[in-house]
View (cartoon, rainbow, N blue to C red):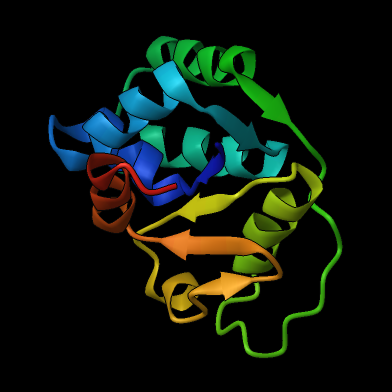
Length: 135
């Protein structure tokens, strides 16, 4: 599958062992991760600000994400029902990268459930789909 990992999932994966870290590792091993420079810059900012990783570690993490992902420019989309206009770039990245799923903990995205043919799932919903063998 082609997946977009939202910033909050990536940050949680770096912050602690847990479900987001497991989802991140499964996506690295078995799926294609779709990214944009927008997502990478949010991740970089939050790794430094929220987790307070040293600049060198943050730099290495962003370079690694850039290497293992397919990078796309977000498609320009109009989504009047999107509560957070910054999330439009996440959806635009998914569309331009041909993603099947956006994995996020962001309620503003999750309330949409899907956009076009892209499903919007929590890490737990994604994990449950993987465990059940449904895709």
